[in-house]
Length: 452
Image 1 (spheres, rainbow, N blue to C red):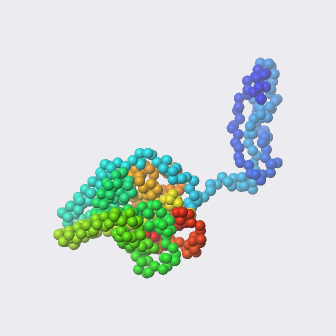
Image 2: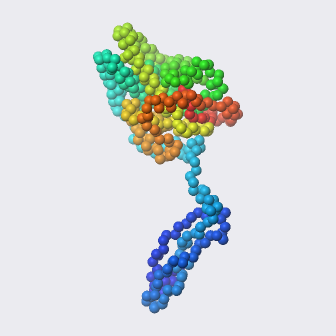
Image 3: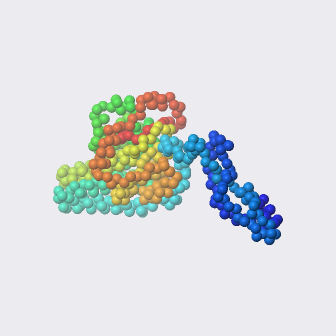
């Protein structure tokens, strides 16, 4: 309107010389009489337009302020100010709340090439690791020095663990798209370190599909309070007293976790469906063949030499396996509340870990969150997939802490965790039984506790 009036008089509009108006939220409870949209400003000086072509002076007119936007809003009382700005404070993050994204949103954020499996690249890691294992064994046997043996045990045990991770990828199908290649390589790698490939593959698949589920998870799930109290003293000590939990894996393969029955070697175990029994028999036969080979080797080189070359590195590998998988499923400072289980929310309760220079040796197994959600992604793409997914995950992703603390600090952490088992309270279990079940028998869970 002002521009039109000026144009009719042949005058250009006055240049805007005022600072940009600042607006603030107004409390719904504020007294309207205390709000001024046009506060007096004694220091405001209007420009003079006396040099008009028509000789008309606008010096004493104040029409500019009548058509301008509000310069400011007068201040509110302190009480009203507190009410007005109370909503500005960011709400505290609730990890038990349903995430605002879906699994498909995470999948869409991951680059397409991250899903591509290159069997030649996968095999290159197998060749590398097997060559290192054979080289270390040959060097240790040749030197046969007690100054060398402890170094060999640490290095070879770590390489056995690396072999397990590659066989683990075969079990997930992330090694290649060729099922037969995955099966052959998986059997060679896992049998060499006394793991029944198919038996473990099937139970591990169950763990991924039901992670954190009170009833259906295969491992790393909370025990009910009633069940824990009814455990015999030997089981409690073995499962929840350091260092025994770090040596539990071979026994888990034979007897599973507390509260579960069956064996990874038994084709008739309730771990497996009838169509999987032939696979389980195949893996058990391969495991038996490896065990027989070790017995024969001990007759050739002697049991002590076999213990030094294979036995102690095997147990170092077991410690690595139990230690790493424990850290991926437990120990975060923030305990998650009970919540309605789903595949996405169960996977989000896992934890990434940064193992520093060892990350490359054990094939980036520390990138565990994305691996749990999408186990078909090859290990050599997990780092970039994780980085791509972080903006979607937001605070539901816990940044990994580097494990550069001393061995005493790490040991103290594990001791504190194992001394405080996380259990499902009996009263809550009773309440859960009365909840209506969905088709997949979802239940609330609690994370994390030192259960194996």
